[in-house]
Image (cartoon, rainbow, N blue to C red; front, side, top):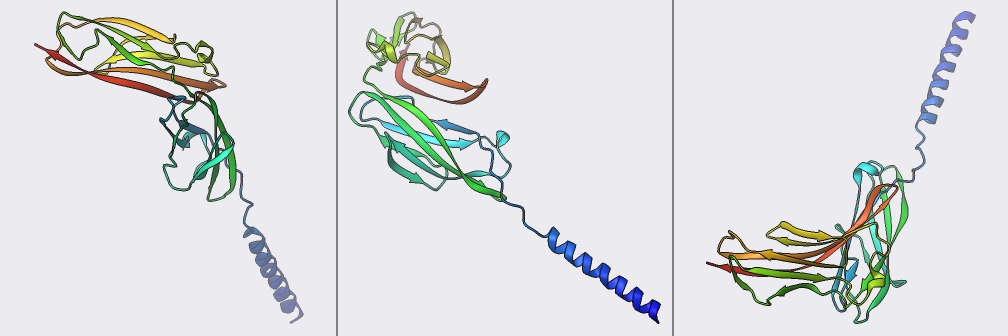
Length: 236
């Protein structure tokens, strides 16, 4: 009988220890700080009274699994302009009628299951400039015939050379004809003589484009583009 009581106490001891271990193993781990890498699409150069449009997104492949943007606060020259809590978190702002360099700051709240809400800050310089000239066509007309030559010229920072190259690792000025690249350069002014040959009668699109890119540790972290287009009619 004594042996039976000892055995019973031993078994109860095991059960008690087992219950204790289950309670300890049920502890919830503390939320972790998510790793987040962002891409922000925006225009680095806008004209006075033009709309600045900004859309942030998160690189899923380079960020903690399951984390996402929950809120974005937008600051323009240190003043809170807008708070966005719904995807795609796009910010639209009509810039004032003054030339100059302005500060755009994004305060991004990132979180998710198993992660604590964390704040990340992205800062950008936005140039408000009247120096962008878009695309110039010489002769200045919209109807051409095959065999004619169009002199194309685009000015990006005419009269404001100090702002060219500032803060960006790569930049390009390009001219396209119906999505076909005619010419490109790293300079602020691009000129190109385009002779029409074998073009189908009808409407065609000339696109003048300026793009910038910036990198960190060899990895692309942001950029943007601006451009203008002209519709050209090729007659028989």
